[in-house]
Picture 1 (cartoon, rainbow, N blue to C red):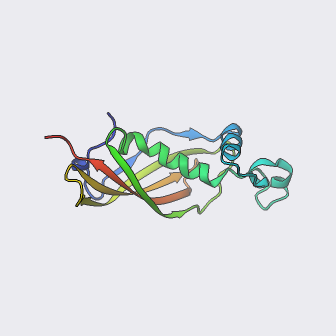
Picture 2 (cartoon, rainbow, N blue to C red):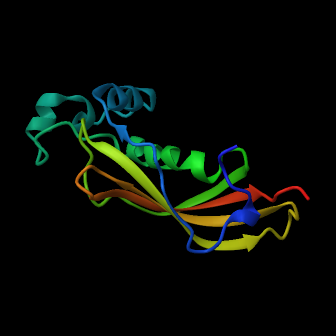
Length: 150
């Protein structure tokens, strides 16, 4: 199991996730159509060319999902009870087809669960960074994690 138990986290722990991912046209097309998002900036090359971006803009909800997905293996895989929420989501830079993404995570806070003695809450900041070193997505995530069995 790759994820960490609640007891193994410390405030300030920081992870540079090893998996990198290049966004493809298929990723953007499938995600946009599967989520019924008809935004021309994501699907219509001619409309996208006429926009200020000059090219297809990758669906922002895909960008967010990719950021969280890249973090799971090192943070919550096998120890997650539930994600409790995502806050302060920002997308300061656009993502384009062909951009290669990497993610980082940092622990902001830890709190024992009042209702579940076998679990605790970890607050993470996740960032998604492109090949130019630009942060393209960031959020805070609260996750309820299992404690290590004693």
